[in-house]
Image 1 (cartoon, rainbow, N blue to C red):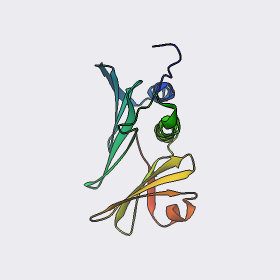
Image 2: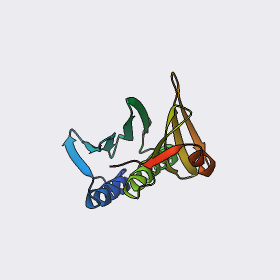
Image 3: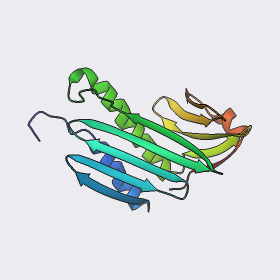
Image 4: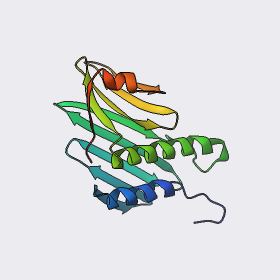
Length: 159
């Protein structure tokens, strides 16, 4: 790596290692400058892609009773080495790390409220809440989810 360049994704890789140590089923693939990490659970599929100079992101898919919730977050086509986009890169990396930690610590929750499947996990400013309705998937950021948790039947997302 060139002197002065930032190694994007290092914190994610550190947390992947912690998840491995906790017993997660993880496979990795390195090709053409991209490092892809796959996490599989009974109801969960996660793909994390790291290219330290180009791109950082993750996509997750959760299945519950035949209903699939998908969610993704990435740096899009922005030049992640340009200082103007450093806060975007940091936000994406933080979100991935928080999700990985939530998986490890059993803080990612899956449940049903009024026949809608809901996935939630901690975020830097509260919680990310993904609700799969009949036709629309809604993504919210909430400060507190206590009331939400009391309205449904939630279990920890197994890795």
